[in-house]
Length: 112
Image (cartoon, rainbow, N blue to C red; front, side):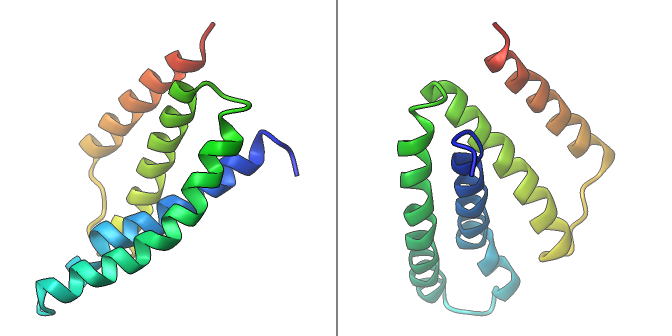
């Protein structure tokens, strides 16, 4: 696998776990908050098992600023799908416009 692609795949996987850890409990609002916190911590453990190697490997290829920017873009992509698919809250035109501006800003991180 390409050395440039592996950190991105690990970041993508970690973002899936973290999105569920942060927002998955919103589908179960009747569950006790303490249970939501413990479950989120458990899910976050798996996020860390992907995020730490992604950052370790990725920092040999990308600058730390570029790596963080890639992570944020992946977070937006994962969150957009999660919001629509899992929570049933589709994005509106202004959300897409705001995300596009963020992606445009991220482009500047890689412009030399």
